[in-house]
Image (cartoon, rainbow, N blue to C red; front, side):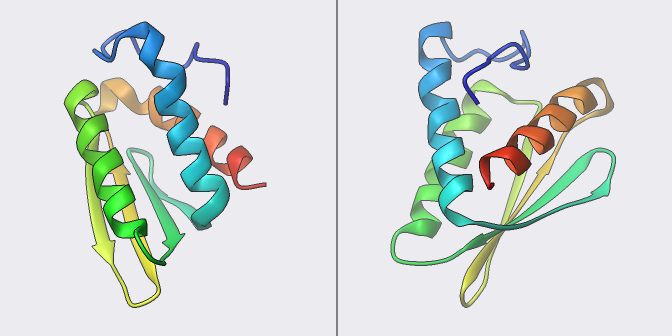
Length: 109
């Protein structure tokens, strides 16, 4: 996930910090992603394997990402052994969600 061309210009995270944030998401997905669904064009549903500290890690990333990319809406659903993470966007950012879905699928391989 090293190519940052897909990061929208509306992201307010400083450019030099973007690769670090992408790496955090990539590590989470490569370590924990168990399934990825696209139930609607503007929504992505990720299922992450749970474990010690995983929920806190997800919530921390979601909070920081919401602070710089306000077009994302994150919903977390903790389960017994997993954490559901829904990511939604407005119609103007559907292409960003498309890229995120593709990159997430690639990170889990």
